[in-house]
Length: 244
Image (cartoon, rainbow, N blue to C red):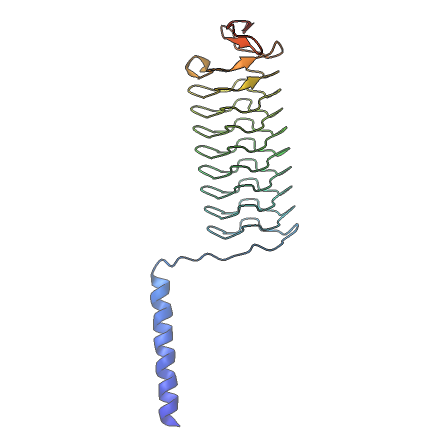
């Protein structure tokens, strides 16, 4: 009996020693919470690297949540309150953020191609280097966002508002820009190749001389910066639509 007790004590000591060693090292931990959490309060929670793929979190409170590197492809975050949330390097392909509030949030370097941001508010958020290829931003508020080198190619940005945004080097190749506003935005180095500008507003935009408008056309309702001209959609002649 005494021998059995000593054996158990020895095993416990080994287990504790192994736990202490693991705690002393950087152990990769990737919890999975891909279930449903409707209207739950996760404000300020540390969720870095969590697996939230296919999760259902509509209406959740994520204000100030630390969500760097989360894997949330196909997740539903519609109508969440995520102001000041950190989603840097997050994987958000085909995720749903419709009507979400992400003011002052960070989505820098996020992979969010095919995601839905219709009606969301992302004012003052950081989107630099993020991938939004083929995403939807209908009526989305993006005032003063920092989206340098972000990729919005082939996205539907109808009625989105980039007023005062920093879009240096951002890509809008083949994007739908009907009634999109770029008022006062810095578009230096941005790429609008193959885009159709229908009612698009560039009034007060700066840096347009270094932006790429190759094969881009504009309708008569498009407002261009003073001195800028583009061919009218449906024609092959440049200069039919002029800023001024």
